[in-house]
Length: 422
Image (cartoon, rainbow, N blue to C red):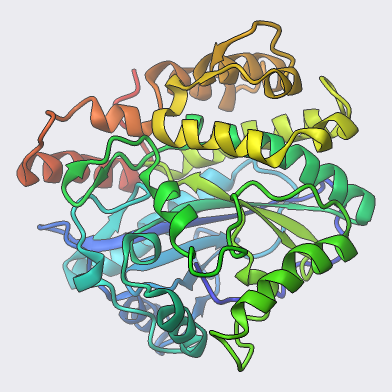
């Protein structure tokens, strides 16, 4: 997570699907050992001549800037301003990755993808960002202990979708509540933790959803409650969150919308909802293809292609949370039988795997894009990145075996290639 409270380049209001914002987080690791290296501030100093929290775009990546995150071994690449299309973004992010890799190489470092480092010991190796915004990070660390996996070892891709008014906010949030539980079944990339199989497809989301248990209102059930107005959200969600935080943060440093850690984070300060449940993939073109499919699915729900917005709002949070827990565990293999969830996507059968549902969604909402559709068909047929990583490993993999696989993943990131996708 980042303490950056607002992207000043957002102009308001932006209507539904008129623009998009994308953020991608990567680990900085040693080129030889692949151990984490807490040198993000040094990277930024080399890039700009001083230690800063943001590096503005001035290279071939065009519209992509870099930011710090809570942990010093993580760097975030993001769209500098809302972009009207996802077309071309994969290439821009890829240029940014390669520029960072070039700066890291003399330091003996490189970028590593996937949502969790496979053998990092966060209690011992986490170093918090010590510069601008450190006062906020210190509060998080004091309250929650930010040296566990749920803080110091998790990387994700965020999608920001705008809304121009309260009606658009309500329709967008209603759609996102329905979509969130399916996302680990297309984006899970974290099957390994502490050098071992975790038994989960999406370990990052499991540790994320429990990292703030001391203040239950921070993440809630990850799927947002059915509160579809700004006033209702501020009264029922944020006010209760701030009340729970107050004994731990009497100065109110965390009294801001960014303290809400639900999987669809309402950001009224920028007129957008931020999707936060996606594991990052092996290269930007995979992330952008997934983002394109998700946004088209959300558009279909907002347009009420299968069920009305009112029916979407009526699906209980607890039912959606139950599906989310299943996809965290089993990814695309999850069997979904909740009638309301199946109806939301126009699935007529009484039971369907999440992988089958995603294939049907692709056929319906993105059937013929010349780049993303064939790419997504290959990815869906091969399984999530989590499935592909686990498929290369023995039941009890050695560190050398893990290093070999994750070195291949680092190469995939640098060259913009999919991992083990026929």
